[in-house]
Structure formats: C-alpha cells, structure tokens
Image 1 (cartoon, rainbow, N blue to C red):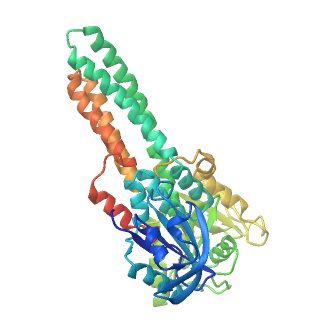
Image 2: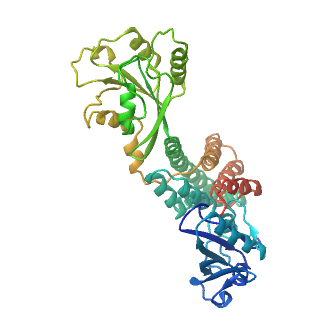
Image 3: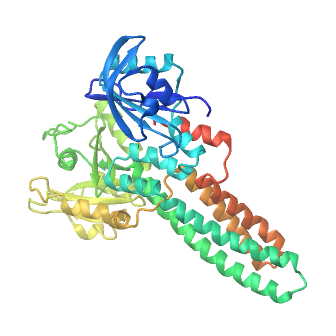
Length: 451
C-alpha cells in the first residue's frame, strides 16, 4: 500500500486511445519525470495537461495526462491517468517507461482493492464494479450500478442496526437480571424482531438466487422427432439461420446451440437431433445425446407437429419430460390441425408456427410466465449480487433461526445472544466490515488488471 502501482486500464489492441493508470503517493512524481509539458507536481487536482511522454529525452508519444490528488480519487490516493495513442507497441512502451521510473505493475483488481482498503468502497460495492463490467443485459447493469451506489450496503446496515438493538437489550437483561419486566420486554422484542428479520432476509435471498440462476442463463432444450420444426424454431428465435433446415429426416445429427435474451434474461438454446429409431451410427449418437440432456435442462420445449396425430415417439418424449419444467409446443399451427389436444391436458401448451412474424409470440410469453420474467425485470433490482454474498446471508439466516428456536425453548438470553451476534458478524462480512485477508485476496484476484 506504500508503493505506486501502474497498469493499462483499457483493452490492449488497435484503438484510438489507451489509458495507463497510476495510483500511489509517488504517482504524480513518476509521471512528471517522464512528461514534457506543465510541471505536474504544481498542477491543480482534477486537471488535464497536454504534452509528450519521453524516456530520457527519447520521445515516445503525444499524450494527455490527468492529475487527481488524494483523497478525491477512486483509490483515495494520488492518481494519474496517461491518455496515449492506442496500439500494443505504444501502450506497452509508455507502461514500460512508467515502470522503469519507480512504479510497480498492478495485480488484478489492485486499484479497486486499494479503494476498498482505503474506505472508498465497501466489499459489496467493490464486487459491483466487476458486475458492471461483466453485465450482459440492461437489468444486470442496473442491478450492479445500484449495488455500486450503496443500495445493498444500506439494506445490510439496516439489518445490522436492528440486530445491534437486540444485542443491546440482551446486554441490559444480562447486566440487570433482577428486573423481570426487562426480561419480558426483551423476549417479546427479540421474538418480534427475529421473526421480521428472518422473513425479510429469506425473501431477499430467494430473490437473489432466482436472479443469479436467470443471470447465468436458462438452459433450454428443443426436442422432438424429425421434421416437426425444431431447427426452424431455433432459427426463428435467434432471428438468423443457425441450423440447417431441410425436409430430410436426420438433417440435424448433433447439437446446435444459440443464445437470445427475453426481457433481459439470457436463454441458452440447444437444438437436438430428431428422436427416432435409426441404423445410422452417427445419428444414433446424436439421438442419445439429445435424450441425455433432458435431465440437465432448465426448460424443455417438446415440439409436436400439429398437422399430424401423436406418434409413439411423441408419447415417449411427453412421458420423459412430464416432471420437468417444459412447454409442449404444437408447431405448424398455420396448417390444418390433426393433433388431439385433449390428450395433453395438465401440460403447458403453446401453438406456434415459423411462417409469420408473430408465430413465436405466445411461446416467448409462456417462457416469461414460467420464469417470472416480468416480476424479475420490474423488481427494485436490489439483490445480493453473487454466490459469496448469498452464502453468507444464508449462514446469517440460519443463526437467526437458531436464535428464535432457542427463544421459543426458553433458553437463557445470553445463549440467544451468541446466535444473534453471529448473524450480526456474518452480515458484516457481506459489505466487508469484517473480513479475512484470504477472502479479500481471492475476491480481487478475479478482477481484470487495471481495474
């Protein structure tokens, strides 16, 4: 923390501009040694200066240098950003010059790590930085941005304040055991507060888990016998021709994958080989791979041909997917229908075709309904943003439940206090009030260099 670090803060490659970022007590001094232009050590904070980077009088590049003095910076240290021309050679040469004059190459996430250790960000806000960078849709971006702004921190601090209040009441009870009315008030308040906290914390955990599972993408399997329109449905969902479509049975022999977003939620779609009895060895392998994926899928689209009666293979696939999250898609609704819909009662049924622009509208709406996408998209977008936070919240929830159970069994209040205090400390780990060096090192190791 006493040295000065430097790294490329932009993607390395051909581009208009690259940014080399320095942070530390000597960052302005180091930059000034290699800069021809205004004396940076005399420059006011948050100002930009034109000049050249030189290496012992050898010109390297024409640049703009931004000077930002502590503590009003990202890391709360002196920060300098050198805006040079893009390109691998120029960028690396500027960075090399910075390092030769006393800076150290930053480790992954070290700028944000310093922001955390210097009190600029808490732990949940630090994780939100990478969530913003990694966001793949608008909801993920907004959710991460709200965490960065401190929305998650406010919720956790509110929980901790209530627990701290309970701990204070218990301390009074322990210090003044002769006052029985205090014990009665304490137990009543503990019971009410614990019940409310368990309910609220459980809700945010459930919402966060649902959001995390959807954030990773819904693994969607398209399955059916040959020529029912599986590949046509895939192509229509993707809005381009990914899979080959012919009227020849067995055209699709292997898995064909694609990705779409529905209301900000990614669907990872897999088109499979048509299920049928075949003597073709390659097709047999494709059919078996298709059947094996049924157990792994989050959503199964069972495609049936509405222009034909149900076949034995159709019945078999309906049976195999009966207890899975699935939609029975009766395709080719633009043709005369011969399928017996009455035999499909108690299943999620959608009629589709790939001939009209609105042919898959009902299918998309049914997927939204099954996965509560409208609810997820319109919530306040305040979630625990990753598995670490959710895991710690669950541990805190278990401690609260144990405390409530002990209260109901009339255990001494000092025993109850242990579990409440554990929940209090666990919630502190989410935002970094309490943490271990190992956790911090592992967390920031997953960041990109320069952030």
